[in-house]
Image (cartoon, rainbow, N blue to C red; front, side, top):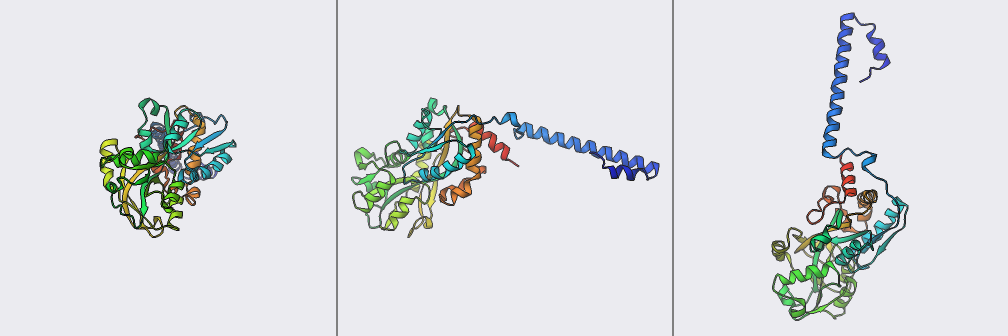
Length: 344
């Protein structure tokens, strides 16, 4: 610790013995401070929290694309709000691609058609090990809630009551179809054998239920989902309880599933209904540019409140929980660097 000029000047007028003691005390404090700083640096280095310019490579540039989901779903709206913020930060072209959902998104990221994709954790875990090794996570975003929707006057009270009915199980290549099949299997049902299955996205599914063309539909998405909210303004609906399937799903497929509750205020005229939730992950390729992914992570985390004001499910995005992506997927190195640099 350097002495200020005024301190040195004042010491000149102290008695010799007092002056020597004061100078010795100053030197001891300097050594103590230096030791403390050195110790702190060692702790930071050991914990991987000290990040210098060499640890954070620059983004090499180039366009970015995001695989989202059906146009009326939460994935797509989230992508619409994230894209311009990434564009402003990267100063590069950023586009979004509407898709069937999680399964297709993972395929598009793996084969390089898209830089980023949003997918449910169970869809990631369902990949073959060699495919999963080619992917990394950017962040855990928010949870999807499984919603089995029927008209309020429907006789369907439980899963088994769907037998023989026209039921939308989600579009091909969607996480909705994956989890719908798994949930039905917990009571020994198969869509092709036991239902009249309909393949459709959430927008068409809601319209078909409203018009009486189907008896029920499965949906897995953030709360609230716009298409379901719009449906409540035209049709009285309710949700079939699914909470008792969560334990059986975990026993067979692992910890990607949990018990959850659709809150009463999620939709107009609603009530609390037990169901199953599964996390959503923002994913990229394992070989994606480290500098790019570090900046993407910063944009996702830095804009969580702004995006959350329009996509309510995104209000739950939080750096403290975003790192918990494994299982089923390790963090990308660029994301890991951002989270560590963001720690206090």
